[in-house]
Image (tube, rainbow, N blue to C red; front, side):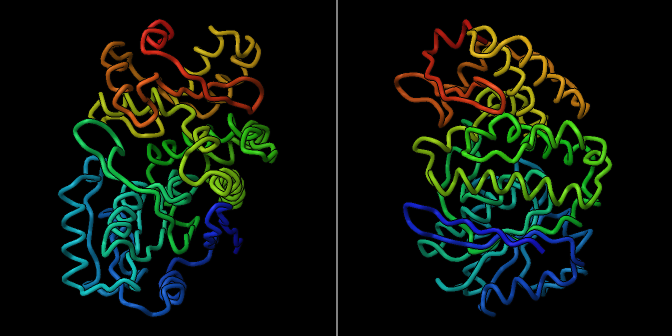
Length: 354
């Protein structure tokens, strides 16, 4: 087992992240110990419950099963989970345990942040995307008809339990969706303040990653989490540095919303990275060689390109997003090898660039 720790500079809030490939049936005891045998509910993805419900062995009366899909991260399910928590008589020192991908973690975390003004919650990610990104850092949210993650809070978990064995049954499309976030870290690494040579690791080990070699994945997850921790420790609430984690997301979130979540988050982030490379090259922020290197790395992971979307609809969607304000849109672009920077564009400028 590998143990990492988040320690946020501003608040000195700390919590552990455990990365392991031990048997999944041992997970329940570790979680119960972490919450000190207090009362709890488990919010779990439907597919994960079907595959691992017996192994996890939580009492059925404590379990809230959430249907699959990004569309389920909504007000209706938010209310249902809170009602379930009240029926189970959860108090302020009790816990919500989130077991699933980013949808479950975001939704259950937001419920925990607002229930009785905040109770403990535990993140148990079961997808590569959640393992490497969304389970750490305290971003919790739900979607609305206006856009993705527009209602939410920064609320840190009590602990994160990452078990790499969950990835053995993850379908290939969702696995590659997680790789979208992994590749993002390769492009932003040096801007996090770390230099773990993730870009080289990805170039050298992509066959092992795609074949899901358990030891390679463990190392990959640990590297990504270290990069995420480095950013979150310095900037918990995205006042500055944390904006670099939005690399690929400005454009990506827009097409995710416009497609009505037909495409996965990672697929849309990859399109956002292609777009960021293109814009940066047009503006002279990167040279042709680095643009080619970046695109070549993406191609090694066999991502299918998405269709083009109406430019005006993309711009309109971006203007509603959290990354925009009255002065324009904050857009993260590559500037050199594994480094990015935030740029501010007016709507008219963005129209020309996109």
